[in-house]
Amino acid sequence: MQVPQLLVLFGSQTGTAQDEAERLGREARRRRLGCRVQALDSYSVANLIREPLVIFVCATTGQGDPPDNMKNFWRFIFRKSLPSSSLCQMDFAVLGLGDSSYAKFNFVAKKLHRRLLQLGGSALLPPCLGDDQHELGPDAAIDPWVGDLWEKIMVMYPVPLDIPEIPHGVPLPSKFIFQFLQEVPSIGAEELNIASSAPQTPPSELQPFLAPVITNQRVTGPQHFQDVRLIEFDITDSNISFAAGDVVFILPSNSEAHTQQFCQVLCLDPNQFFTLKPREPGVPDPPGLPQPCTVWNLVSQYLDIASVPRRSFFELLACLSQHALEREKLLELSSARGQEELWEYCSRPRRTILEVLCDFPHTAGAIPPDYLLDLIPRIRPRAFSIASSLLAHPRRLQILVAVVKYQTRLKEPRHGLCSSWLASLNPGQAGPVRVPLWVRPGSLVFPKTPDTPIIMVGAGTGVAPFRAAIQERVAHGQTGNFLFFGCRQRDQDFYWQTEWQKLEQKGWLTLVTAFSREQEQKVYVQHRLRELGPLVWELLDGQGAYFYLAGHPGVSVYAS
Image (cartoon, rainbow, N blue to C red; front, top):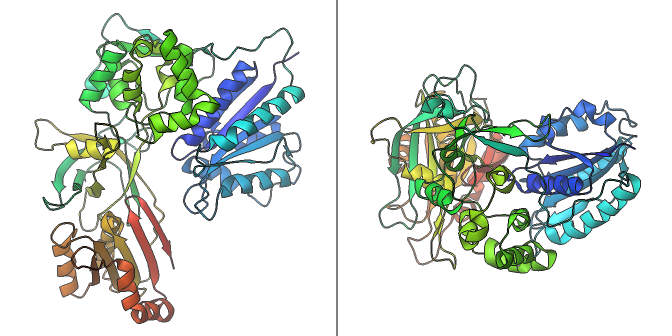
């Protein structure tokens, strides 16, 4: 009797869907099912016709959009040419992750479920619709659904009777074995980084470009509550090209202090070199991790120790703990009944993985290094709207970064990993200061026709992509640029004030401002739009203008 094979495919934007998929994979291995877990776009979708049992885990992003790592799959699966019997041999289930405060709640999961039925697939259960808005989070829907799913799978796909389940509380084997090197390999520091300072092809997530930082300037006034930076990178010889509306992805690093503290708490030698050996054949190396590698490099550039841990972190940590009191607490926090306490302890105050490990020192000090990659997720890249045009700033790329810092009930303020790291970079120090980055097309697309006006509404740092668009259109001789800009005070956070005013004087730009804190009654960009309603309507209805709205860095929507 053969061991049944399960395939878990995920589409994840922020890592939650990937975490759920890997959790399902661990549960499958406990039940002695053969299991593969893959991102949807890394899976050869043509092989789906030969898969007997598949669980799809997918998030919904933006206004009902699929995550970036399932967009190719999404286009393929909705081809009209696919026969209605394509997946007639496949049993499937769909687990969705969404937010019911959005109109298109779990749209991707619902639509995928319907499409798989249309192609002949057999649904094991109705789709699970996890909801971020629930007081217990997505797990409130996921836990009972997953219980029903395993019951159904184990009846339909029984494992051989002589292979017992691995009990909960017993850790599964790690994915990789750390092989520590006794001698220091003869490689330079540059070879320890997967990024390149002279790529042959356009940079990507697997091989970013190491861009030198040219300037790092605070652009908010000294009295302003937020530190906002205009940062400029040199992209000479990078093979990077971009247009207005495109997005740059930046891979941050953990601070030196946090890296040191992590190594101390886990009793790791930061200077030790290692290579990785997969426990099972066919398991690919972790993407973006050079080998051989130092522990310092792994912790500072790869492990997301500054992120807020998910429930799965506590599940594995409980399995690994040899300390009775700490293990009992970890089991409680990872249980279904302990989710409210986990929210209060971790999610609500935004307690980080590093801080949790410090709270459980006996457990942390005994974690086998082999489990580091199972326990702690990879640092995820952050997206920023590009705030400059190559036509105005050749061989340069600029971004506007609001440094994230806020207080919770914890003593230490919370810091955004990427924005704080970028703000700390000093291009004036000895030696080059480089940042791993790459560019992707964004959701903003500007009209090419020279006589089409554009109306741009940008609040705060949301104005960044519109600066790139205005620079590009001015370079092409395009007028009809209308910018509604909102901030708090003109002398504190009026980004690019001089630049806008010069363009206005030359007739390239119509600028309308809203300074919300300069009068007793707050005035926002929507008030200015209402005041100039007849002009806006004439531009839209009479001249076919495009209307764009952006209010957060890296997140922009538009309509024409």
